[in-house]
Amino acid sequence: MTTCNGSSTGNQKMNRRKANMKFKTMNNGHSTGNQKMNKRKRRMAVNTISNGRSTENKKTNKRKVIFVMGATATGKSKLAIDLAIHFNGEIINSDKIQLYKGLEIITNKVTDEEAKGIRHHLLGTLDDPDQDFSAADFRLRATEAIEDILNDGKVPIIAGGSNSYIENLVEDENGDFRRRFDCCFIWVDVSPIVLHNRARERVDQMVAAGLVDEVRGMFRDGGGDYTRGIRRAIGVPEMEAYFTVEDDENVKEATKGKILANCIDEIKENTLKLIDSQLGKIRRLKIELGWKLKRVDATVVHEKSGQDAEIAWEHGVLKESLDIVKCYLK
Image (cartoon, rainbow, N blue to C red; front, top):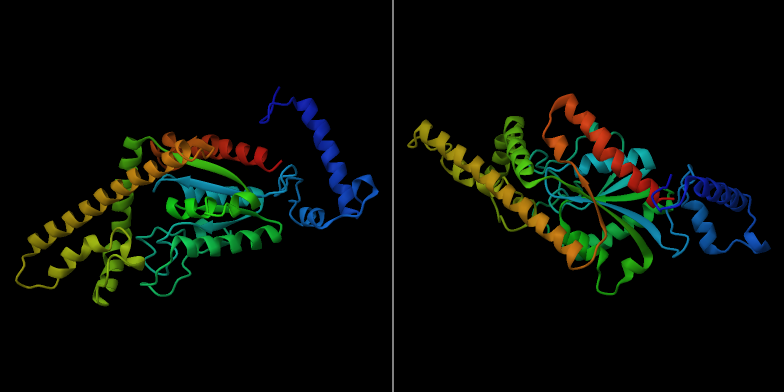
């Protein structure tokens, strides 16, 4: 029987015993070859997870970072949380709209219940709804968060749909990130037809959860520039047509209802356009830049509902992703 790296289980067990012996030796303060533990080895001891898996590549001395990528509504956030639970991780948000406080429904931020106690960095941290936060800003803040997480002996997991942020972080012009960090890219993918249907359903769920009331508060605060900050979020500019006539007594209620329906349809259409754009960027990273993306197909999950969907998630998406990360953190 072979494992993720192609070695036999017998060889793997022997290697694992050797690795455990080496780790125990390091923890006792002794180094191989009777040499003193150097700075890198001390950092290695700090960044070794308690179950024996390592957050540092022993061959390259690069520290390990996991990326969970995918289009809107594929299940990135759920997978990132599940992985963080299994591998003692913390999550760094890479969704440019979820950086801002407010609009919890439209931005689809994870709730406290969904987060399951996992710490999230760069999630709902910007107070000013009009503040610009560039890809360079993200690179700086995300790198700081990665270092903090690793220095705490935990696994950094970056998750979000803003691929321009992720690309700018990994492919910085000086190549510094690639020199310092070893990356594992997990791509949660869903067939386009199924994903489009799921996205439409999610917009309906957002409307039922209070999307209209949530955006109304922002509109009555003066509207604003829809090209900046949190107001760029899909669901905000699309609703302006409705709020413009909502309190107009000269407009019939039936007409208002049609305008609202058209606004919701526009939100759905723009969400589908976003999905297609995200998928195009991911494919470019894979094909043109040569990123080694490990694709995990979540289509069957979104074809089901309720308990059946949860079972499909655990036996398919989660199991495959756990296997990928276990191999990566060896």
